[in-house]
Image (tube, rainbow over all chains, first blue to last red; front, side, top):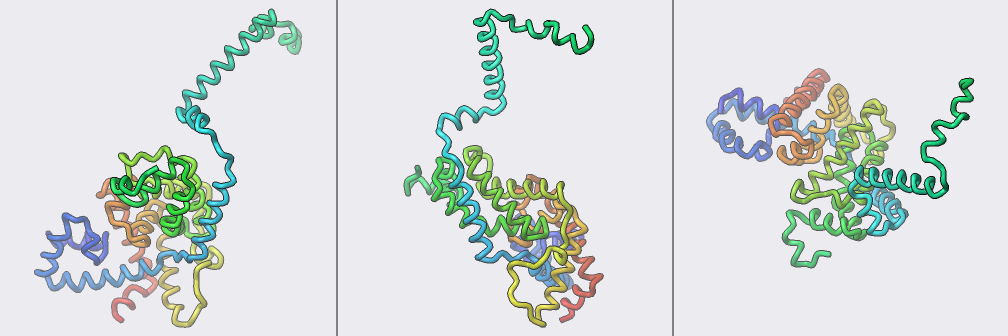
Length: 133
Length: 195
């Protein structure tokens, strides 16, 4: 490991070598034992580590508990979904497309049954009357 | 659905619980929340910089776990990886809609104990780190939040961010250099080293 490699990894992952990528830990330990100046650099970065970690957001027990209760209440309030519904909605777009086509076919059948041409309304006079046709 | 003998095949207790959640077991879901809510809050708070938004994000993330549990595929990712991705994606969505709120402007910190004179120095340091994070993108803050604040390994953090280890290392390096520069500019880093 070169000094450049050591310094970059130190700058990146901090002074705790056990948190470095596994394949780098062995060479880094060896480098550290053979370079006294690297030890001083490591201690300097350990100080920076402590400052960063100290800035971590604190999360209290009360806050955690409140969040758990809120989610639990919300999930329990959700309507129970029958298994077949979740199955039917699982394929997503395919289901929507099938429902759309079924709806269209149903509409067509209904109009045929009532003797009305499915396309008749598109060509009726009322649609042109607004434009003076 | 799983018996005691079956749970051992899962990589972690969370994976085992998640399988039960997918079957609609609300008790397992509560247990899963108890094991992971604190970390979800911490990650979101680290990325977003304020407690209120973080609370909403963590809760929304668990709502999605409950509603979409069947989408989790244990062959694709551990529950933790899948879940952290949900949290991070929600954070990124939130950041697109709202600006970063600096720590000092984020209102009262809900978790602080009583303030004391000896805490002033550490609060200065905390705010200096917050200022440095403020200058970074949410992806850099996510890297710091996962690796330094939450103590995840580099590999776990990279997986959670859906990055290759090298790309994650670059993010972390840039973030840490920014924090170091801000602390040095504030005279806090050298003081700490000297003491």
